[in-house]
Image (tube, rainbow, N blue to C red; front, side, top):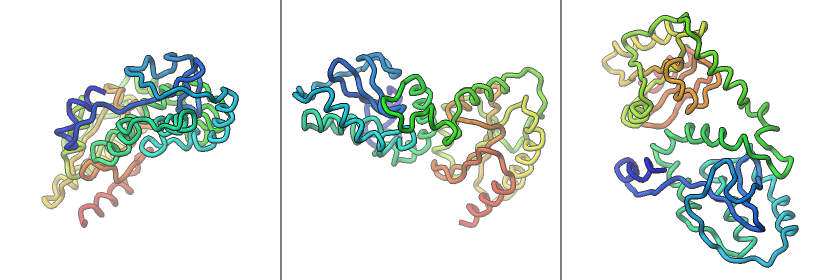
Length: 292
């Protein structure tokens, strides 16, 4: 992750070279944790060719014993139990390495994600990283029938086809929703959006589409809220909007399932997520933050 290497010192005060995905290669196969526990030919996973290979040692354990071990731990490494900071692919690789050769993987891979996602920047980009990872692992087949993405889509409300349908709807050509209030800044550059989330004390991000019927009413309501807080000299709330019909990559990175939706960030951390825009809840939250 080149951006992490170039910006980490200035943004979080320490140098990191990347956010790593790891797998373990043994018995001529590559085992990794994504859509449950997966097994593919070496270098043929959805994550592509490894950028670095580290020799951990040789094992004398038979493959059947290793597969029994994987079966035993499979309930802890499912699509649902994945946590990008504390139970990720590197934790899985570390357990496999410990079992096979009694040796842990290097700390730069094992502990880096947890340290990074504890920072304000990490909290901000976490939804984007998760969305990108979820898209990658759809092509992998879990070895065990324990919580793969395919089995858990209904529970997680993450349906790749539904997401694609949402984006298709965003790509219509006939506008049905009017532009937003002048009190809301329109954003078309995702890098500027990321920077603003980090540097703005309180930021409301409203995602909408000019070809979505529901946005007719919601655009009016978010405009009224923005004007109310913008005219309040004691308020430090900044309102940003993204028209996902024009900037689809933002909808993808935020794993958007419905339009319109809204997020509230305070000092770079998410304090309110509205997968379905609710103006009353939003105004109540902003009032509470103002009092704080």
